[in-house]
Length: 281
Image 1 (spheres, helix red, strand yellow):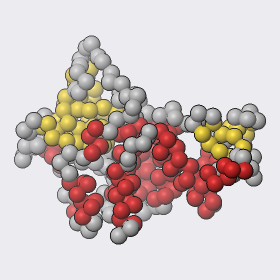
Image 2 (cartoon, helix red, strand yellow; image 1 turned 180 degrees about the vertical axis):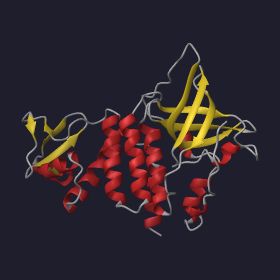
Image 3 (cartoon, one colour; image 1 turned 120 degrees about the horizontal axis):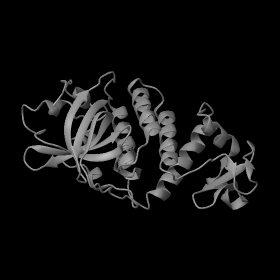
Image 4 (spheres, helix red, strand yellow; image 1 turned 90 degrees about the vertical axis):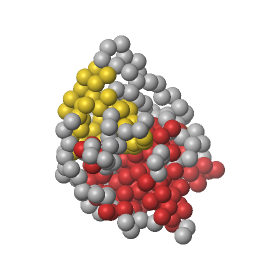
């Protein structure tokens, strides 16, 4: 297999022990996190893929010397692969199959879990450090929860890489995460055009308060709904990626929480709970 050496993860040293426990757990809770409607693709013939841009979302032990890796690839979507021998002490894959690093990978097989045949570190990405590292795990957990296997999301893949770069370079984490969250919800088919009012059949008005409901779309808020409503301006700002207004930042955060909570069907986001616990220390 092709592999290039990577630097050790010294960026973990200063993290609180709660985060280190999460990062170093042999089997992360993400292992069993699947979208409720997730379907596994069935193939009747062996598939061979090479030179596919991808990132590792999660890995866990398989037998004595191998790993099962959950990857997000640009043109093939999310899938699981067997990385044979990756746990061996002298395996070149040990330093390559890391999270948050762009890779070029190849695989072959006709089962639900094909075999990794090549993995090459692309480089060009700064390592995530401290809180940015936990935000990265949060993004990975969202992808594990919402993406159906073997369904391509090339635009979302590009958005994911761009968000990692923004976090690595110290750009505003709340803004970067809001953009990613809504991109994920759109790409997953869980939200449509949030600037379209289902009641008036036209564009939302900046000064009017609206409620966003997955089943009913966007409509003007009644008096008793104002607590969970957002301005039309917020929805219009989000459409063009403008989060410079503090009201847009606050209301988009509230809306993201509402929509994610609804579509998670009560499931707990482990990384989000860790963030809440750390803030309460």
